Image 1 (cartoon, rainbow, N blue to C red):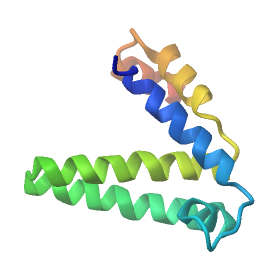
Image 2: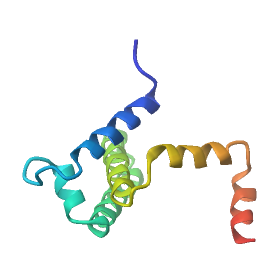
Image 3: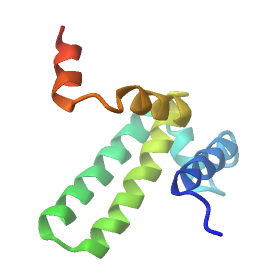
Length: 109
């Protein structure tokens, strides 16, 4: 049986956390984390831009690959600032059932 899709994100987040503090020459994740939160954020931004480009081009396969890169780099960026995936998921759950327009208006007030 295939695990729920959400669990792959938990598995990836756990792998990222396990790579923290390991030899940067042995792991891309360790290398990113060793370079600090700012570099992790920069890399996330680069990947997000690449995903936007593929969305505009309309290449579904390329967008799928870039979206996976975005999710990975988002998790690395969160780990670099010690924000856990479950906190992000809890925030999404809190917003569920609320209109996006209402949620945005509430942030302004």
